[in-house]
Image (cartoon, rainbow, N blue to C red; front, side):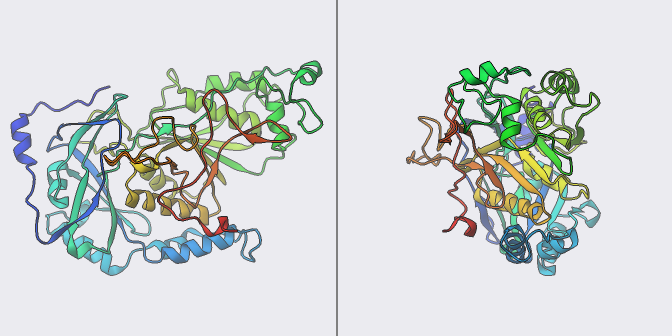
Amino acid sequence: MKLTLLTVSYGLAAVLAAPLEGRADYAVHSSHFVPSGWTKGGKAHADQVLKLRIGLKQGNFQALEKDLLEVSHPDHERYGKHLSSDEIHSYVAPSEAALDAVHQWLEGHDILADQLEYSAPKDWVMVSLPISKVEKLLDTEYHQYEHIDGTQVVRTTQYSLPRSLQGHVDIVAPTNYFGNPKFFGSTVRIAGGSITNTEIAASSLASSAAPLGCLSTAVTLACVRSLYQTIDYKPKNYVGITNYLNQTPSDVDFRAYMTTQRPDANPNYIFTRQIIAGAANDQTMPGIEADLDVEAVGGIAYPTRFTSYSTGGSPPFTPDLATPTDTNEPYLTWLDYVLKQKDVPYVISTSYGDDEQSVPQDYATRVCNELAQLGAKGVTLLFSSGDFGVGASGDCVSNDGQNTPRFLPAFPASCPYVTTVGGTMNFSPEVVAKDGGYIPGGGFSNYFPRPSYQVR
């Protein structure tokens, strides 16, 4: 679906959203280049509504990080003593000075208190505004951009804030994060449910070191369950997977998979669904990636309870003047939802990511800090490290116009508060996977310093 523009004179729209003169009381807050693959189009329509998110500086994130590292370290006396929501909120709540400064700024633009929404600790202020007003607030211009895959978004590359807000605001979104995450996942062939001893013996991997059911030619559930010791597992966990890009899993496909691959499973076993921000849930058009994820979890971890999050707000979309759209801020939309929930999975797996350099560093830092809140509550966050090692051939260059040779880590996998997962192959010795062009990434970062737990 292409971005639909309302039938208003382009000339009039240009006047309504005319660029502002650089104001002396404003300073550039964030500037980021247009990521590779995007082409700039015309001005955004002045009346299109954005749900603006203003991320206030969190009061004491350093203390939250300290607690997170302590409760996560198996050798620390506080290991496993996770924080409550109230304790986390006390760390991330902004100062009264920050709230007052933001309120005064908004009031100066005739934005009333009853228009505002807040996160529980008030470190986020949300307000729905037409682009013409957002442009005045941020001393910027929004344009349409189109990706080579047809995705369209409304974005700016630079925005400014009053000098009085410097030190009080981390980020404002949507602005210069273009947000077109890719699905990471190797293509594997799942062997049939019945594997004979003859097949195992014939495998080039068959050895005393190879777990039961492991072949050189295919991945089997018997092999994976043996490796991860989930055979005869007694359920006490709760697992979640995330879906973006209008992906939704199919109940019918899941049950067919379980019938074939796990005939021992209860035929009524199924995941729950959590639909966020108007995400797609069309069972007649399920997503291959979403199906792959739920089938992997169900096949390996049955009878563990698990849920599937599908997050909307990602283009293609049709702007609606009456209904604000996040215009593809997938991570913030999902985090805003899950951080409010009381019943959160103990493990959440995400197979999506962006090239780190395509994400503005201030945006990446704030998203990473939000992920830390889940970690402090005891949630293990798993992210795919990517499919192309340190970068696809020919793409390992900076995207700042200089084309400097550079390795390309993935985000959010590069965040130090998550667990980055790659892939291996073979046994005795086990080596990094390399199959059909797939090579896992390394979990490193050009933004975040090496965390203390990786220092030896």
